[in-house]
Length: 457
Ligand SMILES: *[C@@H]1O[C@H](CO)[C@@H](O)[C@H](O)[C@H]1NC(C)=O
Ligand SMILES: *[C@@H]1O[C@H](CO)[C@@H](O)[C@H](O)[C@H]1NC(C)=O
Ligand SMILES: *[C@@H]1O[C@H](CO)[C@@H](O)[C@H](O)[C@H]1NC(C)=O
Ligand SMILES: *[C@@H]1O[C@H](CO)[C@@H](O)[C@H](O)[C@H]1NC(C)=O
Ligand SMILES: *[C@@H]1O[C@H](CO)[C@@H](O)[C@H](O)[C@H]1NC(C)=O
Ligand SMILES: *[C@@H]1O[C@H](CO)[C@@H](O)[C@H](O)[C@H]1NC(C)=O
View 1 (cartoon, rainbow, N blue to C red):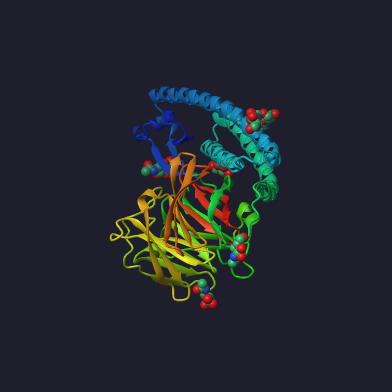
View 2 (view 1 turned 60 degrees about the vertical axis):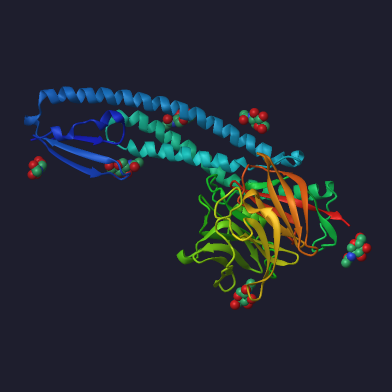
C-alpha cells in the first residue's frame, strides 16, 4: 500500500491556515514543530481510502497556494527595488561621510547606523520568508531560488558593510576630532582647563552629534554618556555610556577612548545586580566611581570601579516626587566640576525647588547645602561648572536655554538666557566635564556634546 504524504507548513500563508486537519478522520495525522518554529503537519492516507471530494478540496488549496506564491513573488520584486535603493544610499553615505569636514558647521549624524538597522530588519524579513518556505514541494522551488538569491545579495551587502564600517567609523572619529579643533579655533575658544577665573558661562557651541548609542537602538532614549570628571591616571580618555528603553538603569559600558566608543568596543561592562538597579540616568563618573540614584532605599549610590564595591547614602530631605521635565525618576542628579562632587535634588520643604549640595568625596556625606530658586519640574536638567549651578529649560523643539545660575561662592543667583541648539527634542542627561570644558548630553538616544565658552573677567 502506497501512503500519500502531504506536507503542509501551516504558518506560511493565510491560505493554509484554514486547512481542516481534523477533517481527515479516516487518515492518520501527526503534527510537529519544524526547524524554524513552523507547524509541520504530516497526513498519512492509505490510497484505498482517498476520497474524491478531498481531492477537489486539495485542488482548491493548490490554487490558493499559487495565488499566495504570486503575492510573495510580487513582494520580492518590491524588496529587490528597495534593496537597490539601500545600496545607493549606502554608497551615497560613504561619499557624504568623506565630505563631512567641508560642512563642518552643521550637525553630524551617522545615519549609516540607522541604515544598517534597516538592513538588518530587512535581512531578518528575508530569512524569515526563506525559512518558512523550506519545503520539498516543487511549487515553492522558483520562489525559494529567488529568495536564496535575495539572501545572497543581502549577505554581499553585509560583507560590504562590515568591511567598510570599521574604516568609516575610524575616519568618522578622526573627522570629528578635526571638526572639534576647527570649531575651537573658529570660536576662539582656547580652553583653559581648570581655570575658574571667569564670570561664568558666556555661550554654548553648536551640538556635535557623535552617533546613535552603542545599542544602535533609537528606542534607547533614556541614558547617559560622558567622561570621568576627575580621572585616575591612565583613564583620562575613558568614556562611559548606559541606556535603556525605560528610565531604569541596568548597565554601564566603558570605552578606553573616543574611537572605541564610536567602534562600540567596550573594555568593561557593569550589569547592576538586582538590589542595585538604578534610575533616572543622572549619573556621572568621578575618580573612577559611578555615582547614581537608586530607589530601595531611595539614596545616592556609589559604585567603585576599582573595587567593584557599592556604597549608598540616604539624603533624608530628598523627595522622589520631583523630577526634571523630560524624564521620570530624576530625583537625585550628580555633577562633577573643577571644585568637586555635587548632588542636586528637591524636597517637600523646598516645595520642589532645587537644593544644591556639596558631597564630601572621602566620607560620601553631604558637606554643605544651598537653596536655589529653580523649580525642578520646570527644569530640563542642571549641571555644575566652577561651583556654579546652571539650570536649563526648553525654548522650542530644537532650542534649549540656560535660564538660571546659582553661584555657591557668592550665594548669588542670576536669570540667564543662554540659548543652544538641540539635535533631538528631549534628553535624559546633561553634564559638564571640567577636564575638557564640554557639556555631554544624551539626546533621545544620541551622543551629543558642546563646547562651553566662559566670560573673561
Ligand atoms: C498511523 O499510520 C501508521 C502507518 O500507517 C500506523 O503504523 C499507525 O498505527 C497509525 N496510527 C494510528 C493512531 O492510527
Ligand atoms: C545623496 O545625498 C545627497 C545629499 O544628502 C542627496 O541630495 C541625494 O538625493 C542623495 N542621493 C541618493 C541617490 O540618495
Ligand atoms: C530544509 O529542510 C530539510 C529537512 O526538512 C533540511 O535538511 C534542510 O537543511 C533545510 N534547508 C534549509 C535551507 O533550511
Ligand atoms: C540572482 O539575481 C541576479 C541579479 O538580479 C541575477 O543576475 C542572477 O541571475 C540571479 N541568480 C539566480 C540563481 O536567480
Ligand atoms: C584672574 O584674571 C584677572 C584678569 O585677567 C587677573 O588680573 C588675576 O590675576 C587672575 N586671578 C587669578 C587667581 O588667576
Ligand atoms: C575605590 O576603591 C579603591 C580600592 O579599595 C580605593 O583605593 C579608592 O579610593 C576607591 N575610590 C573611590 C572613589 O572611592
